[in-house]
Length: 333
Image (tube, rainbow, N blue to C red):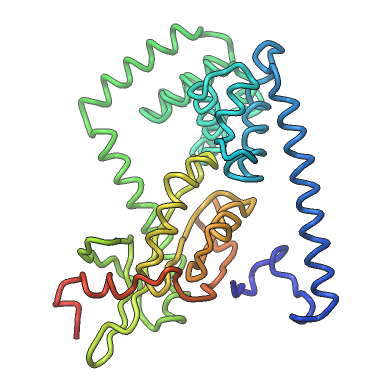
């Protein structure tokens, strides 16, 4: 992919293509990546073996699972890592996923709005933290109170469960969780669109506007259509993804794999996202081989652009004509 100048570590200049130096550098880098990945995998598998019986800290267990999933989506035999980790650790797959969600809560940027001792929060028992995360997602003020009470050893797990039932009851009287989630997602998209608008104006000469387009094949948060005299010349789609509270397995399954399929219906497809600062999003898309996908990473505070990578090729397979034929006549010249 063509890389925007603001990228730092991943955007250093490399030797001229075709040179012997470049080939040696690529082989060496690939070999070192494989060695490091293998070392991380061995560490993770060793840590997970009998983890429940050995009472290994739950956050270490989640870190080990994340390390394996970032190395590859499945183990060498094709089985999902979460299944392997379950067999090794003694925990059910459901329990491991719950651990992952609780660890994601510790990275929730909303916590920065409150005076919370993060070290003490991280050291709470898993069951406490899981309950606190649920309370916080229903009612932030009640969540902060639960955090302070738990850190001060003023509540036990049974009392936290009672708080969950109370805030669920109060929340259901007002706006539904689905409506609140849609509102939060809309605010996220609006913030991202404002930040990236200049990039799309410079590349396509058009202002980024949300334009609902009915198609049986694929849709996106934003669509940019360039029309010629007789046909739709090109269609660009942009999706905004908030990965800040998602674990890597959910990012791949719920967002990236569907995005890779969706991208084949557009001339260019952009993923604008926040979170995932270790570049695993781009590595996954590279594995899925979708050369017409571009990336814009936004910092977790949604205040600046961290990195831009432009699309480098045509969609594979190319399904753009299917999409163009499926849209309403009002969009066609």
